[in-house]
Image: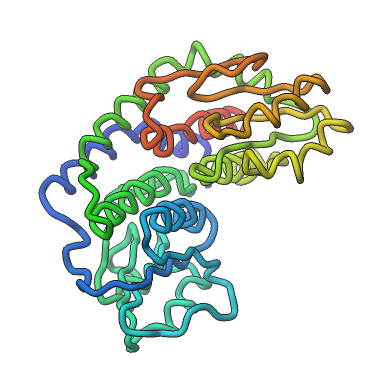
Length: 317
């Protein structure tokens, strides 16, 4: 991994998103899916699983039987007709994902692989290959591929549910939001770095509908600069993480939007913890980072992890 190249990967996000938007305008990458899909099973690890978890939740909310599984699980749903299995791996070489995929190869289930390397072993095992079109991540960290995975899973959602959503237009807005954060980083990044730089790590909080933002952000702090970091869902925070505010110098990166934000923030205020909010005003937050189109939850889903990625890039350097 390389910190300078990682930063370059982040700076290339707007251009990469524009490329993906163009691809989606030209063709539907999921056009080859079977018509009779009764169950969707996502398989992945790390960033891939984070994105899949959000996608599965959205599909269930729309009435689709969908599940996101750790690829490392010893077993999951058996192969069956009507089951759409979507293994996700940016490199197409994740051992766990390849092992899980092997259980469905040549069976009744349909395999649609989501990967950034169409010639990878994962692609070779699939009935349909959906390229991420994220370009080479020379820094060695999944950042653009994570963003593109989420975008493509939104396109899958639109196809499976018949939802009238212009995903390329969403990607145009996301590119603008991403560029806005990059262009104005001299304004918001230094105070964010100072506020989050505590002795006990960083804690990231997001609603269930965007939990991937908290999970990916915490991973970025661990993977690059090797800082302690952990993610928590906003409502669950009051049941599992609240205890840390009593004994630690608690520094949180909050992605607002949950109806349970205030419940968590009451404890944060009472115990004098530090919160940096991203995308919306939060009472008593030490800092609030806004960006273009941050009132659109889908833009937020695709954009907001850039804050943590840029903080991590600075600490890593």
